[in-house]
Length: 147
Image (cartoon, rainbow, N blue to C red; front, top):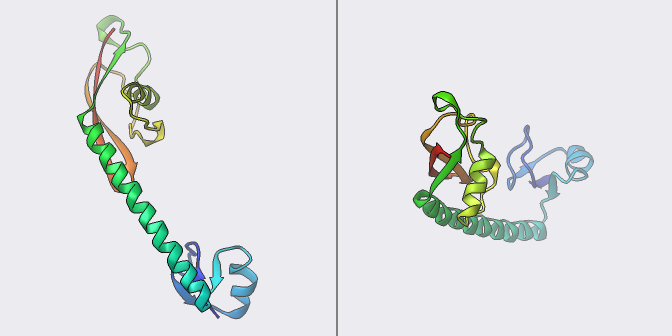
C-alpha cells in the first residue's frame, strides 16, 4: 500500500514523502492516527497543492522576519536598573525585560525568542541575539545603565 506521510515518522520518512508500507500497518496504524493518507491520484494532487500553499506561506513569513530583523539590527535599547555598592545590580535584566523594551519601541517580540544564556547581572553593553524565524536571527544592542 502506498501512503503520503503527513508527519515525520521515525521508521519511515519525513512529511510529504510517498512510501510503501504493509497494508495492515497503513490501514490500522498510520491512517487512523492521521500520520498518513492513502496515495490515490486525487490525494496526491490535493497534497501537492497544500504543500505549495504551505511553502508560499512559509516563504512570506521568512521574508517578513527578515524585514523585522533589519529593523531590530538598527534598534538600541537602554535598560535603566537600580544598583548598589560596587555597581552591583538589584535583580537582573531578563528576556522579559528586553521584550518589554522592544515593545516600547514598536517591535512585538516574544520573550521566548530572545536567546539569553542567563540573565544579565552587570552594567555594560550587550549584544542580545533574537531568533525571529528558522534561519533568521537578529542582534539587538542593549545598554544596561544606572538609574
